[in-house]
Length: 192
Image 1 (cartoon, rainbow, N blue to C red):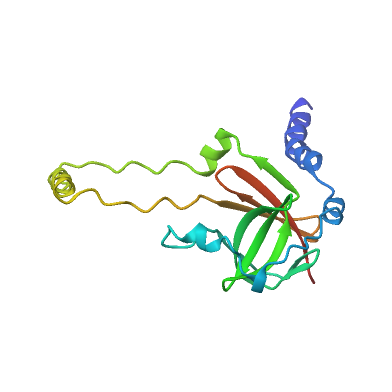
Image 2 (tube, rainbow, N blue to C red; image 1 turned 45 degrees about the vertical axis):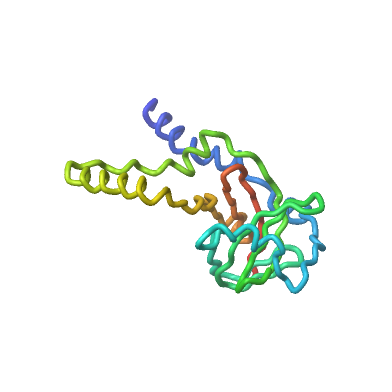
């Protein structure tokens, strides 16, 4: 009998955490602000300054598989670049498509990342292995660098990670965007 009770407790324990953390997504969605921020010709004025020093886009890319809406913004299935911004006291994420702003989505929760979370999400790259055969090549590279000067390396692009969930019986779609410093949570309603 004790074994059966122990097994039942172990089976119910993971579900109790899920029920305890469940949020009221209807209330969150209804309390989101309607952003009336207007950009000229739907172009981000800071995009050129953000991407001038990189070879590729510094923004994360996401693909949506179903139509989404968030207050006044509606998104068709497709690819979007996500850009977190703050303006007029609002935190929001720009969804860009084909170089134009497709919509602005308000952030309902923004929190700083802890060092443990940051290390888990963005682990340091592995160090290259040194073999005996690569030592002459490394010595040659050092000689060339000293003879011709040090070349500038392009800066590391910003690090982003995404997490997405379909919640509340397939009614809402939640995206968590992790940047190097913050975690941004945004919420969409799935259009049928």
